[in-house]
Image (cartoon, rainbow, N blue to C red; front, side, top):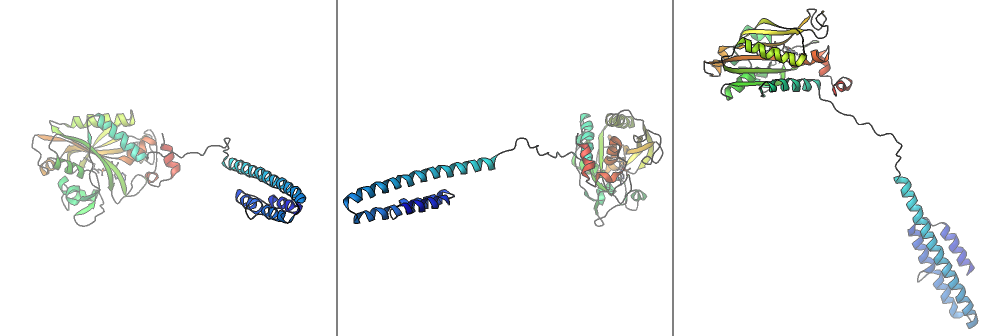
Length: 334
Ligand code: FA5
């Protein structure tokens, strides 16, 4: 009997989990287990011996049962402790930093300009980046072979289709759809073969058009001066006579260079002023092309958004907008 106890004690030392313990229990206490074997041996004993033997087997059985229960408890406590250790959270660890995105400075500038014009009652319309030659040039009073086409080096897709060189074709699209009066701005991408520190082959413009009865150049001047004051604050503004085939008279608007405060720098080509937009009274030919009645007239303007963003945020190279360098973009997360 002693050797069974010893065998059990050796075996239980090796047990590491509940499954092994179950097998050990079956091996010693099961129907065909070691103790059942012992009980069977009792049949060969004398009555007196049987009593003593039976007592000892029962003692051994109780010992084995108790030891197994104790081991069971030990194993479940070990498992519980281990899982608690594994799931432990170190509340002293520093938190992971979240990266916040920022609105791109071009988008931010578009949003600011839209807000100003909406507050004056302008709607917002959208045109197409792939445009007909007809809308980009001809209906804007720029016929084929017209010298004004040299002003804008164009990416042609075929003879009749091109990447729009300005947002002005949206004027035609909206006027063809809507009866006067109309009053809207239209932001979007435009394309030209042009590249230096203030020019990019893809850039953004905002077009503006106001058509109603009895509109004068003074209305144009009032709206644009107020817009520039709201966007830039108090900066010098000057209207300079210019030429666009789709407006007559036409003007370009300059503001005092914000980078050098008018002293002259490479951004303003040492003139102290920067051209920020083109504008003028809509040419009667354009209004005729969209069949607007004679009594209507109005003004239009077009501005380069990159130019506005560069001046407002003091950026001296247009390429920074398109390189997606997060060190640059992060500065606009306000
Ligand atoms: C036009 O594109 C006219 N459609 C504007 C207009 C609209 C005039 C309605 C009258 C009535 P212009 O080519 O000057 O005009 O361009 C307008 C503005 O776009 C410029 O003042 C400049 O700020 C910007 N711009 C022009 N070329 C580039 C370029 N390659 N990269 C970035 N900005 C540019």
